[in-house]
Figure 1 (cartoon, helix red, strand yellow):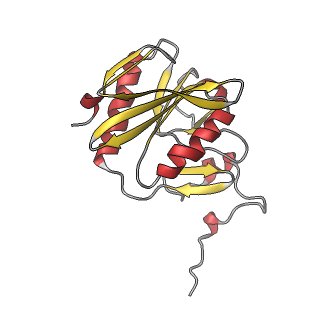
Figure 2 (tube, one colour):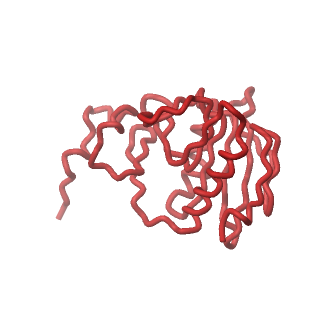
Length: 190
C-alpha cells in the first residue's frame, strides 16, 4: 500500500523546488532546507546537547563579533536558485531585518554546523562543499567528543574554491579569523 503525499509536498514545477518556494511552504516543518532542488525535513528530536551548544555559541559570538556583524541561528542561506540550506549558526554583515527569511552568501562571513546523528553526512561533506562553492570565507564544524565540543575551523582557499583546515580546537576556541575569538568551549554545555 502506497501512502499519498499531501499536495503541498508536490513540487510546483517539473524541475523541482526552488529557493523562493521555501517562503510559501507554510505546512512544511519549521526547519526545512532545500539542497539541489530537494526538500530536507529536520523532524527528528533535537538533543539537548546540540540545542544548548548552538544557543550558547550563538550568544558568545554575538558578544565577540565586530560592529557591523550580526549572528543568527537557524536561518537559511540562498546559495543559488535550487539550494537554501539552514546552518546552525551564521555570522553576516547584512543589517538586521525583522522580516528577513534568508541571507545571500556574499553577506555571510562564517557558517557553523553542529553535527548531529541525523545531519552528520550533510554537515561533514555536502554542506561544506556547497558553502565553499558559494564563496563563504569561513566554515566551522562542531563535533561532540564524549560530551565535549571540538571545533574544526576552515578557511576558503580562493584559488581552489575549497576549504582548508586551519585547526581543531578542544577546551578553548582561539582564532583570529574571521574576527578575534577566544571562547571556553567547555562552558558552552553543562
